[in-house]
Image (tube, rainbow, N blue to C red; front, side, top):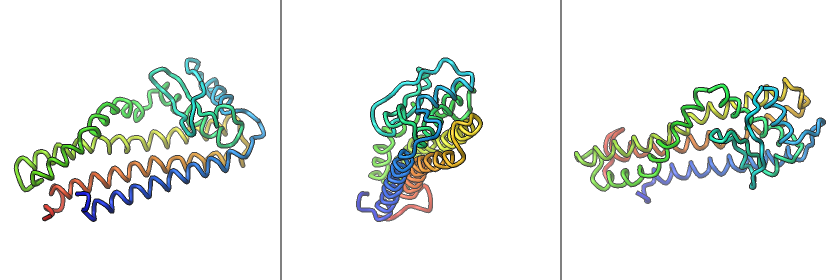
Length: 237
């Protein structure tokens, strides 16, 4: 399998997309982290202000170590902002902080895709953890050309699809959070139009990482379905 040209192509595309998206995100974040907003509100200030605007009073905002480690934890209703966002008054900090608050607002409003993604996490973890072993076993047993291989192939593809579904549903969740972020920043007057444009570029770049994850997962799923003979006929190797 590791010498399969198609497999190497799929892995190569995935790596290139992931590296490009990561570099794009970090580069854009760094660029707009150099510009301080006129309001001089830190990421923490922005987050707390938007939460108040949304009438959400049970979410805690706290710093977390690392770079671009910002996230919202719905289990504890905690919004954690990285060091470069929590205490910074830059365009990047404002955009990222508002984005994470977007997730908190989604949670408060029981946003459907977010509820589904949260419920799907254990399914995706289970599928991702054992699917590769089932897929390799199916390949060793002849894939769709044998009864046992065919059954294992279907099981392996279904298990791997659990992770693909997770990356897919993540897209509307993240896009909606960014949409909410920009709307709240504009509505609250926290950023000027030019500053809002900079924040949008940061969020657009960050979204590329989720797109790259989905494309990579979908291509890998398609590869296995073809490799095991479930699509396009069995490959003779």
